[in-house]
Length: 141
Image (cartoon, rainbow, N blue to C red; front, side, top):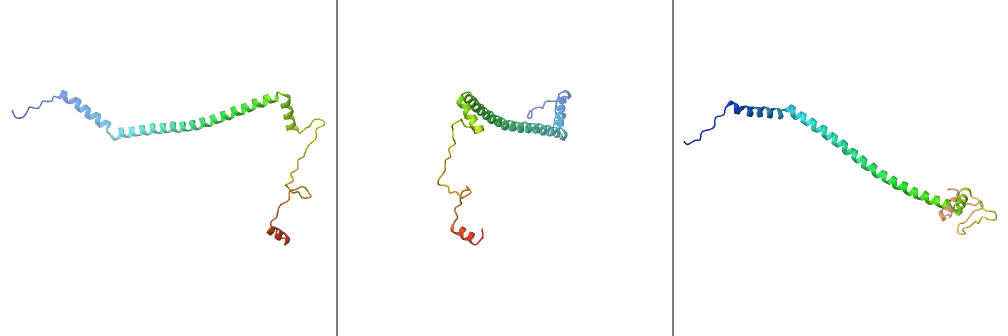
């Protein structure tokens, strides 16, 4: 016997093969591929929206942390101010700052800078260049 004998297939053995063929035809049909494509697009769209929300949440988280640190610093400043205001000297400093008052017998001291030149009406004089004085002489200012 030169050629081996091929097995004979019965109808009972051919049914699973035909069912697999029908299943593949359904899976690879244009309609099922379109449904899978639409489904994939919807999933990708949802994932993109979640990604955008994560970016926004991260940015808002950083902003909230900055605000929190600013509030903590402000709280420390207010606590230090409160401690200072509990003393008589602190109260006196605050009243003098807010209302410009003085105790009886105190006088105001005015310090005058001699480097600044003043005109008759109290305004600072402006230094004019040579050309500015020539222009003003001819009335072209």
